[in-house]
Image 1 (cartoon, rainbow, N blue to C red):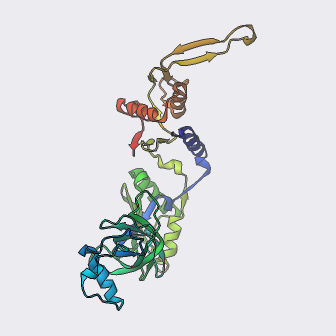
Image 2: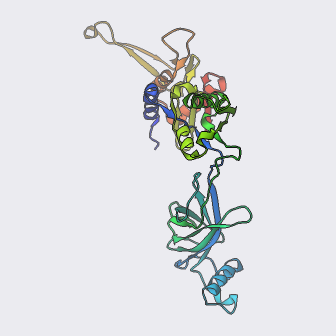
Amino acid sequence: MRIPVISLLLAAALSLISTTHALATRVQELVRLKGQGESVLQGLGLVVGLPGTGDSGEDLIVARPLAKLLETSGNPIGGFDELAQSRSIALVMVTCTIDRTGAKLDDKFDVVVSAINNPASLEGGELFLAPLRAPLPPHDVYAIAQGPIVIEGVNPTRGMVRGGARVTRDILMPTISSDGTISLIVHPHVASWTTAQLIADTINQHRLGLDQLGDPIAQAMDDRSVRVLIPSTDLADPAGFIADILSIRFDPSLLELPARVVVNEREGIIVMTGNVEISPTALTHGDLIITSVTPPPQPEEGAPLIEQGRWAAVSTSRRENESARLQDLLSAFKQLDVSVDDQIAILMQLHRTGALHAELIVN
């Protein structure tokens, strides 16, 4: 049974929205440096020590790398038929994701191990030393992976080796262009011309805005990138300049981000920003009866007035031309006592009719 977490999530969102002006956002929370991005290393490996659940040694795709391993270990075989009865190994693909900031010698990262052939299970096995290479030519080796396999999900032929990859050479992410500039790439979920221009203006104001020629050092190039010129006085310490730029704080309410409703149908989760609005409308749900109770002026003298109906109004008690807010929609959902699944369906219908004034994102 799904837990109706929507109210808790939205209450938390409203609480955060109400304290926006007391907080400040840093530039580094909205951007990344151009040149910085996750990279993936990959390689083939052998999982050894399996309790009879590995690949068949009769398959040449498995026998060849095993024979090569035995040869390099000083124990060459006479022929592939000697491996036919082996079921204690498995041929696997090994992948490792390197952080966007790169890696230094001897850093360790988790690796994912996936069966290539058809073993019954990798549980109980250990990844033998496997070189991890760059995916593009010349396919240099950047790490070595090995360690015990941990099966985390329901698929026994896919596992993890925690901290299994050890970096053997630095993986650097270039950030400074040859012309002495850096590019700030705005994260997609906050990308807009408004955001890019705000970041540029904030940097210029923070750094007094001018280089030696009197030009602004930061310029919005498009809705996702801001070009920043490193002043000649800072070229000797570009790291300090970049750190200073990324740590600049400003009021996040200036971003004027669009209203969004994010729906995860599989998990039954709905998250809305506090600025979601809907046009005045009415909702009905299945065969439920909506009951509202109004206490009389003198409750002790009689029963309350009870009104019943199949519709819940979603509107505002303020000006007639004012859109209903998020809380009005939540109140209607509470009146209708609908499940999260039905709430998702109602939101989609509101979006289709144009009554939902927000971007609807369905995952």
